Length: 553
Image (cartoon, rainbow, N blue to C red):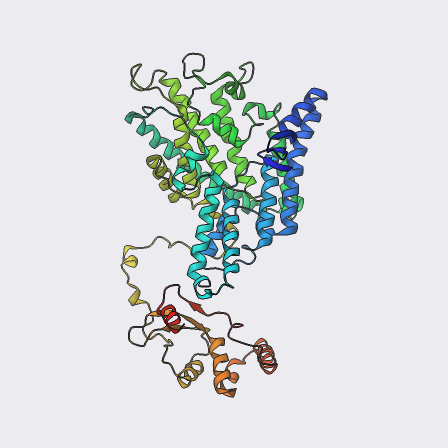
């Protein structure tokens, strides 16, 4: 027997893989409560469902691994730039990410899964790298370059698993099926697509700005800190309850299809039918799909429902992705962009009911505009590119990049993670400056032919350096890697014995003295200090030393 959580439903399967019963579904629970009790009891059940599962997700991450909170992509960008992030690639973090994400998605919180999936894929790749480090080909698996390649592969696998697509080019087509006629596109629509790109860029930059302002407000506002404190769990529970109240089906949620999931609403946005002309042309949407947005008695307008949906989730997603639960950004951004594109497409269908070229030309399909808006807005928020709708995406990306950094770079700055900052604007003369004008020419380095006496003189002359470059020879100076100063001290101690002058140069502070005592005690205790205990040495992934090792074997 297998239990599966799909979207907001908990299903149970028997041994024959047939679904036999629905254990719990928030929509079914709400409808049951409305039919048997009253509206307020149903509202409490709807809100409690979201709050309890979101709270369970946040509590699980707080207890198991706090590193599982959030998207994970900002931290991976930092790690792949060469910085070390403690416990972000551990098995404990992966467990917290998997169960926390399952509960967060099952609660109905407006968050995605792409970022957590990428993080999980990177953790699996890191764990495989550690396992293979005990392999007989240790030199192959233990290089820093090989670790980065494994992390990149893990991230790619995470994206492929998100969209059930082995190739990145087919992600949208594979995950969100679209069925448009071959003649759906006309050249006259290019300016409209460019306009969608402009608005996507502006709203994408506004989204990043609002998210950053919310994070700063939570960190510095005295009233917020007085109410919620510094523990993010209370604010997470508060926002989960707020989302439940706002999206209640018979409350405010009836104005923007609040009871439906992202996947269900996205299917409506990219559908090749028209909401506005449903009673006038054969391209109108089905009655079931139409009633989701305009009500059973047609008491609402599809355009107003789309506009409210866009505004509500634009704010909710900006807040919810910063809660103390695993949360992705890509899918919510994709749905918000699809809603904006669908709104433009419906307006175009209303203005040109017979198409831009008249009755003999192709009709306007708002679903196509939704696909363009989804790609353009997602690219504006994440600064990613796609060849599917290159015009709108490039325009939106350019505008958003000019106004704001990507959402991931913004998160890196908010969390004060180590990163390489972008170069600030400067005069053109600065960009003409060459590296040789500012670099050090007489670089102190070590070659394969350096003697112990030369090593001793180098250590005495440079007590402030912690690491030294290792090159092939003094003429070509091809970089092979770096050697830590403490490893060289250990090497001289092993080969030449204790050196009072070097030890005196190194002991300057109380902490240095304590480290010296510990080091000497370890050395005198059966020589427990070995070259495997010394960290700080780096060997490039592709260097002549690998060839020497293979030749020596």
